[in-house]
Length: 91
Image (cartoon, rainbow, N blue to C red; front, side, top):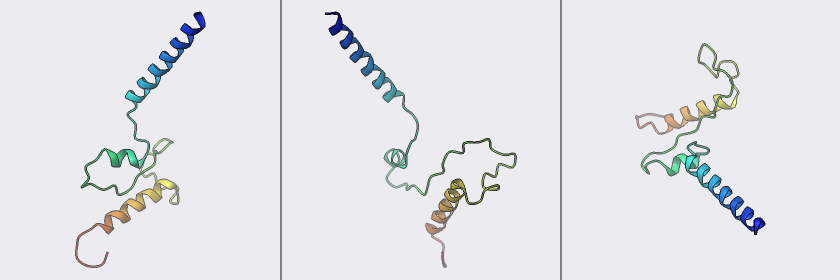
């Protein structure tokens, strides 16, 4: 009887922990999280990865390493913004 109670208690506590973590999860982990939670008329132009180290005084994160992943993300967003530009002339 004690083993059955212990197993049921462990099951209930583990399910409670899973549900609590699920309902308190408020971080964006992928582009799909963003796409699923925005209006259909808005498109995603790109994503910028999290910058792990301290931001330098100049606030330019692409200054020291112009070939980094974050610099490439900014370039990708710039290119996408230029592509959707509706002005006349070449793009």
